[in-house]
Length: 430
Image (cartoon, rainbow, N blue to C red; front, side, top):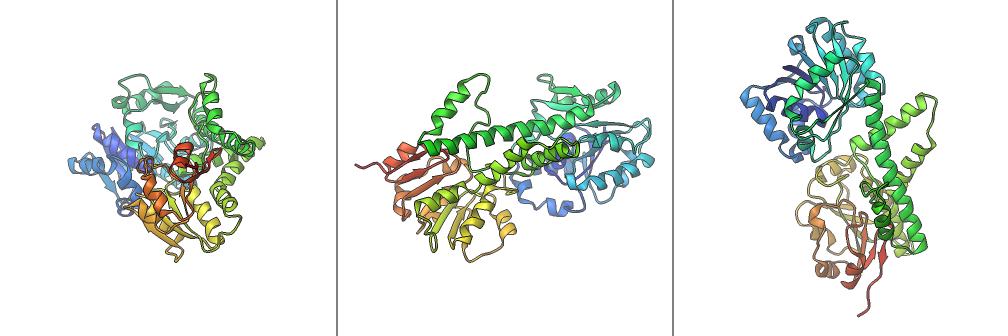
């Protein structure tokens, strides 16, 4: 098929790479806010496994063309929209143009996270014979290629048999192992995508509330987590307390769901609480640091491991580290931060500062002359550190584990004070 992709989101880049890889002829027009020349240099593009390599191979083979204008839309069988929520008007402008120039058999695939009902509105701009489906973005940052080419499910929102037939043919190469399409009406698919992330966020926030209660009661929250997860009605997924979640898709979908609730006249106290809990949790490591030093933070130096909103990505969108840094700097704290991927994005966000030193190679450099270490992003390189070396480097021998990846008793046995989310252990006397 001849496919015209519009957008600069991760979902646009992944669709362009994967669809051209399996033989479709893809024309990709990046959004004007982030043209191809900028995308090609973006850190997240280079950090996504296999993505840039496949884009380059497809261009060399002629199955992918990077467009500067929308002229190729006149030959398209499929228009694939992968835009951010703020770019809805641009989607409408493109579809209005396509309606007149594209073939009568055109299929519109809305892969953007727009408000519920937006796919119907966009199809209303097309000719009567041109079809439209919702195919919500289900990609995972850091695993985008795998989640597209070896999917566990696609939410397919369509209201007629012909559009479903065309989508199945378009994605046939990725639907061989087992049936991965969940077909439903368009509005249902759009709402389902938002509801999934809303439920996951609710589980995380609830677990964070339990971790706070465990702290107050002197209970190790790990026992509680194991007990809850063992109940088959609950399970273990997304049941890990931490110092808050971020990310462009997860946070945005939660806000979008709240907007849908509000616009429908059904404001959700639950979603408001979920978002409030998450924002509050982004300060939890700072509060633990404050308590440990009795509020005397002026002049302290703190090491931070991890800035990305999750391992495997170079992005810091709504990442907990941003809130944490503001709190530390407000108290006159100097920060030494290590992250293997997200330093460029962090410096773009906060700028060069005298009270921030960054490292991308050796994480122990961030700990030199530091009073304490905060673990914010659970990169695999941080899971089994040299505890003896940390004991030598950290002045106050304090570990603040924002992801509960360490064993409190073991850390304490190494002569360090451990504070996690709902977990703690003081230095063990020998």
